[in-house]
Image 1: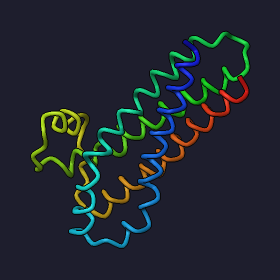
Image 2: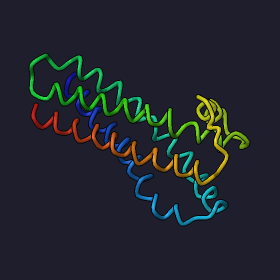
Image 3: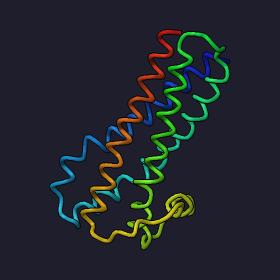
Image 4: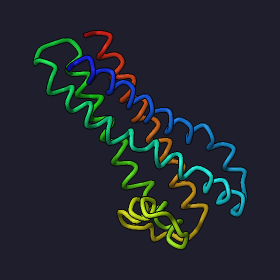
Length: 162
C-alpha cells in the first residue's frame, strides 16, 4: 500500500508543479499583451488547466494517506509532512488569490455545467482594473509555482531517503 501511495504522491505533485510552472513561465510574455490579446489567450487555458488541476486536491489526499501509513520515526516522514503543508498552501493560494479573479473574469461567460460549478465557487474579486487583476492572477500562480515545486521536491526527497 505504501508503494502505491508513494507513486500517487510523487505523480500528483509532479502534475501540480508542472501546471503551476507552465503559468509562471508564460508570465513574462503575457505581460506584453494588451487587454484583448490577454483575455483571448486566457480562454485557451481554462479547459485543460481545470482538468489537470484535479491533481492538486488529489495530491493532498495521497500525501495525507502516505503520512498516515509511514510509521513515526522513519526516514522521510517529516519531509512528507512538509510536502503536505506545501500542497495545502498551493490550494490556499488558488482559492484566496487566483479563484476570485477567475470568478470575476468568467462571470459573464457561458460555461459547461462542471465549469459553472467550479468557477462560481468562492467570492469574486472586487477590483475592476484589468491590469491589477492580471497581476494578482499571474503573481498568485508564481506563488503557487513555489509551493507546488516545494511539495514535489519534498515528496521526491522523502521517497529517496525512505
